[in-house]
Structures are given as C-alpha cells and as structure tokens.
Length: 108
Length: 113
Image (cartoon, rainbow over all chains, first blue to last red; front, side, top):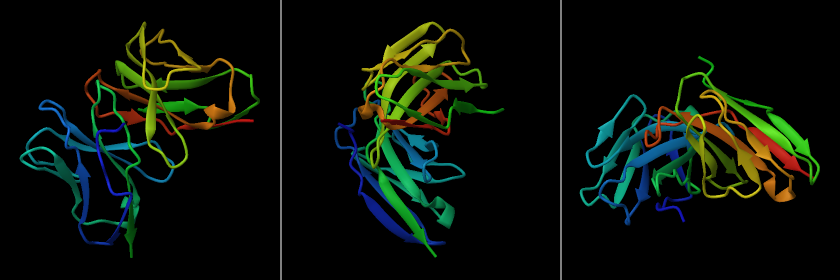
C-alpha cells in the first residue's frame, strides 16, 4: 500500500537527462517526498528529498508540482552507472514504504 | 567510518533453525531499522529502534525479534526459520527518527530450505 505510483521501467541515453516521474496524489501537507536508488543488489542509496520547493544537490534535482500530487526526479547527465531501480517514497506513519520503483536503464 | 556493516553476507538455513543477523554502525546514529526485500519487490520494514533500549514493530514483524542494548548494534533474530523468510535483509541507520536520509548496509542474503 505504497502511497506512490511510478512507471515500472524507463530507458535513457547516456549523457541525456533522465526524468523519472512519481504520482503521490494522497500526500498530506507535511509529508516529504524522498528518492532513493538501488544499484544492482546493493543497499538503497539516498538521493534527495523535498516538501514543496524544488530541490537540487550534487546528484539530482527534484521538481514537485504546486499541488504536490506529483514529482519528477531529474538526473541531468545520466551515465551508465546511474542504471538502477529508483524509489519514490512518501512517509506512512513515519515508515519508509518502498514500492516496486522504476528500473532506469541508461544506454550507450 | 565503516558505515553500516552486516554479517553474514550469505546464509543457508534449514526450516526450524534459528539464527541472528548482525548489524552495526559507527556513525552514532540513534535510529536503526531492518528491512527485507523479496525478489522483484521493494523493501518492507520489519522492526526499528529509535535508541538503545527502545524497539518497535514495522510492517512485517512476525517471526523476527530484535533488541538494542547499545547504540551501535541492532541484531535481528529469526526464531524458527521458514521458507517464507527467504529474502535479502538490509539494515539501515539514520541520525534520529524522522531524519530519513538513511544509510543502508550491503545486505544479508538468506535462503531457508
């Protein structure tokens, strides 16, 4: 019963921007949106999080719509090492509920 | 810093056996948690701890016990292993509950025959 919906898979050309969408239409006013990724079978890695405003760090940018019902994670210049499963998470009773995520494949 | 470490990396058990998965962190994090990940699925929270001496159940706690006697260690005990517990187990930690930039360990791959 993850509170988010993501496409199961996406492809991206190496060097291009990867835009990963996430729907969270039932998000509450004080709930943050978190993004993690899991490369191969490693433990998940934190990417970024946000509440209302757009956020940027050294890894990615997070764009949250004004109504907060959806967001997009942007990897500005995808590399082959960005191939991974990307999870969009909204906290549920302070639990991080990981859904199935989006499998991003970056192709040469 | 070693970060979050987990042992063993791989384990095979027979049904009914018990064992403890070890997790340790050297970042002085108050919050620690255990997740399981079944093939093709996301992670599900088993148990968590907000500090030494305090533990609570997550989404799928049945068949597992935890304790937190020190800040650094958070072992997960399988009381009587079942094939349904075949999974990859991840331990994670963060500074405190609600600070959700969690650091994950490399995982333990458990097979129950």
